[in-house]
Length: 126
View (tube, rainbow, N blue to C red):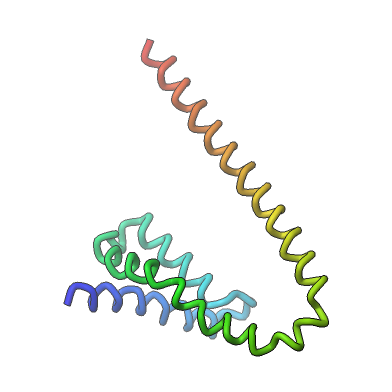
């Protein structure tokens, strides 16, 4: 019963996100609204982590299975994709490198900011 309640919380957030996509005239996907709502709910503690943790862990565990339908769809469209093979490969390589670079820079910034704060805290204690 615990997991049913946790899924209900997640589905409620998804429903609100779908309504927001329908009502707000901005081209933002409902999934983005849902992620932002869940993040805000967790940060503000309106949604305690314990209320969604078990169901969220389950969804993360089965995530690879959720990609099977889209993979089959791509395989079924292989003939149409052959025409775009080189541009798709270039796009995948370039975006992967870009994402890795941005993620690395953001991680370095966070680490430096954390190191700076810990130095400041040690200096203020003396």
